[in-house]
Length: 413
Image (cartoon, rainbow, N blue to C red):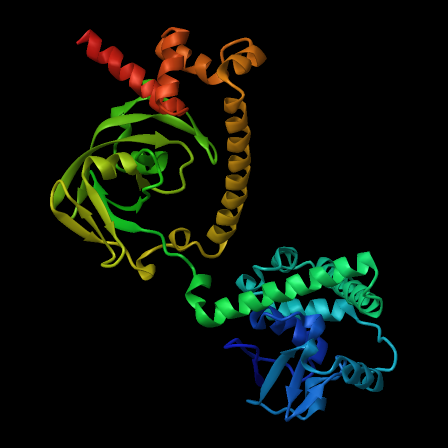
């Protein structure tokens, strides 16, 4: 039978369900989409609250196609709700978590994306581990029960400083939930999936979907794409090294005279080749500035000022799952967000070290840093030259190496 549940704002949940499903499990399945706490929500059907979580759907009198209203637990008066709960369920019933785990597994096995806000349960469902699903559900339930009990005790004695802290946190969370509901109601687009900016181009007559990234310092091609486009024969391995930022990636070298065709126009470009780059081609700020490119989001196009060429950004239907940031790519993006947080923390520490002054920093190390040593090893230059180049490049080792080699080649010519 199919039931539709409406929640606060415009939230709605609709699903084909088994009549043997109990109300408690139905709350658990729908709570995420309705932005409600399944342990503190009330179903209202035909004007009456459904307060017995152990009751089966078929026993409630609901029919196929019926609509239920879901409301927060405080929708009902606390006292009257407690009385009704005691009448409906005079003592706490034992929950069969294994049965609930089986229901959750069957319901969400093919809809893992809907559990993205509950990663522990999402991983357990993906693995098909009934024991782990039951454990996650049971632990979450116990935490909610303990939290509700703490809140009840705090409300009974609000003058206690510790209870005041609990009540303050509860009010703060209520304000956050209200803010979330307001945002979802008035600006639902904020919660949509961001489609990255890709364009169609070709390298040596090989079609490539290029990612336009104004936040990247240089243009990058993956090793697999370079081999497919027959660019490895022009790879200058003297420009090999490590790209350090959000994580580390090995730079195999640099192609100095690449030709990228965008539309009917060929654009000269140089790009670094990375060993484990997930995207085929990333057009960075170096190429965007060199060709006076304009990213126009109003018309959804990239304008290349040096040639007058205009190319449309690809639509969602033209992109693969990696570009859509959905499914496994979404998990990779979450991992990258964690790496970004780590990088920001490291950057903060480095900034504090810099504020301490170069003399104290040199006194701490006593010797040249690993970056300086690697620049000296790659370019065969002195320590002073390496330090000056690294300082001018803003700490970017690859740019420092490129600057030193370029100056060296110019002086020889």
